[in-house]
Length: 136
Image (cartoon, rainbow, N blue to C red; front, side, top):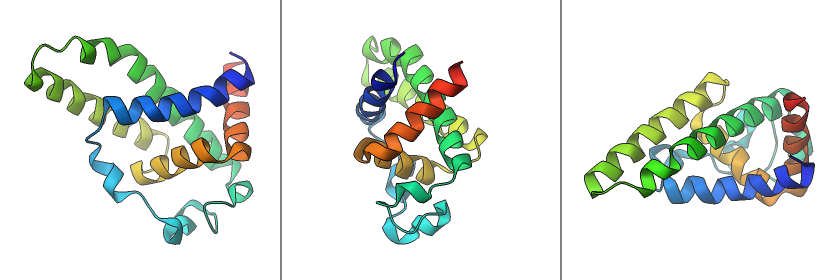
């Protein structure tokens, strides 16, 4: 996948994640700009100050969640009842949280970085480069 394709995929993943898993319990706990110090950055617009380790953790979590959503989205679309859909949604949420935590991030950190990747071209480029490097 080209670098531009990866950058575009970040935005698409954000939309898919919000559409497919609208009840993300951890989304309500996402840090605000005042708690960004937990991420090692002074404010959300200071994407250059995010450590390479955080970028790597985020890229790994991101790709894991992209794979998860890609692999299970058809199941959600084919759910015949609201109960079945809700069960699949809960399984996706739990699996996404597990993927995030396995990388060393917390769900609120991941969501904040995902938001930043969607809104900050410089950070999005860093993530795309990290993903591309890890695929080689």
